[in-house]
Image (cartoon, rainbow, N blue to C red; front, side, top):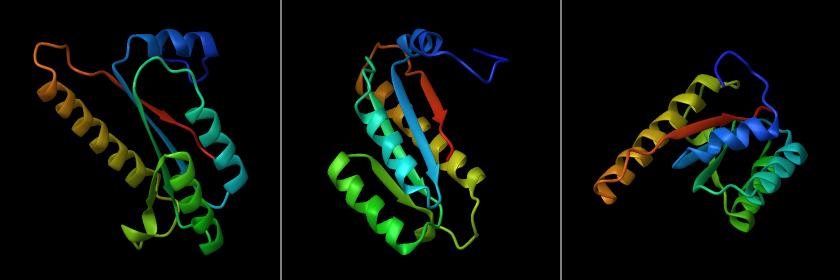
Length: 130
């Protein structure tokens, strides 16, 4: 996959096949309909490996933040409201990537310590932008 920013579905599935755990992120600011369609597609996906899905809300309006909170409870994705973490105005892509990387490292360490003798988890960070 190196060197090419665009992959077809088959190539991505081949790559995911070798993964032990996937961390998928979607940063969003007020693109509520597209974000909820993305969340639905990801959560209904047929991944054959465990995955964790997080939406990072980057200072959306109060109404959209409310809709994201409700969708998070209903659909089961993790919602991180950046307004609760930083006062830096949007966009906060670097912060999102740093937080996602930290979560991936923690996940990897937990898998390594809970499954003795198993290979270390390989993590893929998928970045879907609005």
